[in-house]
Length: 125
Image (cartoon, rainbow, N blue to C red):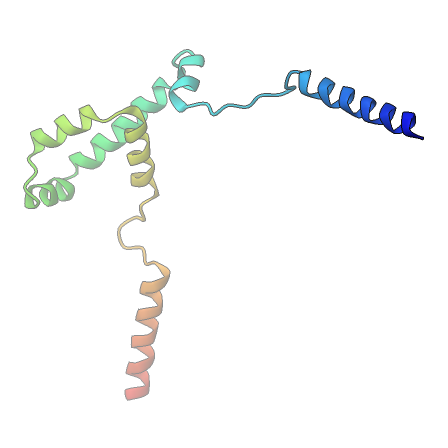
């Protein structure tokens, strides 16, 4: 019985060594956005140009320019800072601008507050 135990241990040791000697089958790495753009051959450029135009159009609005001047940021400084933004920053800013609600739309919280005030006015009358 002792030789059988020795042979099973030998087989287990050989299988373990064989499994450790095999190279890994798959490898996954994180890929950055810049690497994808480079691999695409610059096909992302029109999107960046569109994003930059969205940001520039937003900053060209009179109300935005007025608010920036109130905060002490001149128009020239704003243009310099927008020009210095990276493509990823411009894309993020453009998506935030495009996801902003249009003027005059009410969110859920504002609607609830208005309804509560209306109910209190009706109850008080």
